[in-house]
Amino acid sequence: MDKRTFIKLFAATTVSPLVARFSGWAETGKLKNWAGNLEYSTDRIFAATSLEQVQDYVRKEKKLKVLGTHHCFNTIADSKDGFLSLKPMDKVVAIDGAKKTVTVEAGITYGQLCPYLDRQGFALHNLASLPHISVAGACTTATHGSGEKNGNLSTAVSGLELVTASGDVLNLSRERDGEQFLGWVVGLGAVGVITKVRLDIQPTFQMRQYVYENMPLRELTVNFDAIESSAYSVSIFTDWQKQRINELWIKTRMGSGQEFHAAPEFFGAKLATRNLHPIAELSAENCTEQMGVPGSWYERLPHFRMGFTPSAGKELQSEYFVPRQHAIEAILAVERLHERVGPHLMITEIRAIAADKLWMSPCYEQSCVTIHFTWKPDWPAVSQLLPVIERELAPFQARPHWGKLFTISPAVLKGIYKKMPAFIEVSRKYDPDGKFRNEFLNRNIFG
Image 1 (cartoon, one colour):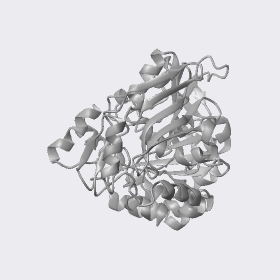
Image 2: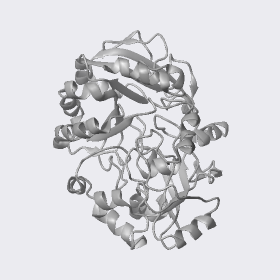
Image 3: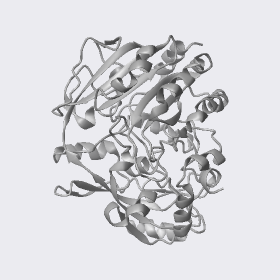
Image 4: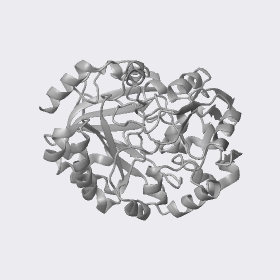
């Protein structure tokens, strides 16, 4: 079955509203992640409604994990013992207009926070491709959006309230705690339970979004820097077939003095005449508005609308961060695998992200380009492909996304994260018995 036929058949069975798919968990009695590829190892969940309840639960449990919005494709958040859910703790605590910060409880999602911020006249610097994810979960795994001058979502974090393994409350801030703070932000669920997050904000702004189709691959390789610097956020979609870029999503910030002015053609690509989905065979109903229609920042930075299925829904995902200077070499390395990748792929997205100083961020001390794969839900096939792709990207010391599927060995991870020893030391100081560790963390970091 070719990709087009598969996607059409799959789309016919996909329910659009996200909540409708989630209701399936109750019917099966099994707790799964949002894409359905991962069944968690326990259904024992305690939902906390206050800081005191979090402290009490942490104190009495020998092992636990915090389970956010179920978006990770691997077992980084899995537990055989018990889950702590902070979903009921989803309030905005305070906005400080003078210092330009907002403090929120850990259970809040970007879909909840962003409209509220906008009504107050503020914005975040960037968003991921979907707004359904929790702020705390996204930041602790270094989730990102796009834009060569935009750091990942974690770079907006300026303060944290955490409950440590002893049940004590620890308050950290960028200003006061310096280097130690940089080790806690991308904590991977290993250093404590995040209960509040303070984020940097800025005045609200408007954006336009344009989509171009069918850019020759050669144009991308020759003009990569010009394409990535053309707008506030740029996403490049390809299925690695026919030496082409299927779609180019350009998100431009209005009133910035550096607006993208959409011409009928852009480096050989043609301006789309209708709204599109990144997977062209799927309906654009789930996607944010395109065609240059002005809209608020939170209605244009994501690819997908809140309340609708992001991406394809039932899928697998993997993603690799390569240093910006090796972007073209890495892209061409994957392109050479197009015959092997094509039958199992829905779409690949390529994005640029600014460097940061967060210890366990894939962008630590290096600007990156990410190569993201949305796969058909066939793990046996994908599990055979990932080592092949990883071998091609190994010369560039590619770092995997912490919340997606990869097979890179723990030894390699230790070699490409120079702050990992310091991170392990901090984690063991505050969690000496490994209360927050699980098989994923023990294998890939603490093993």
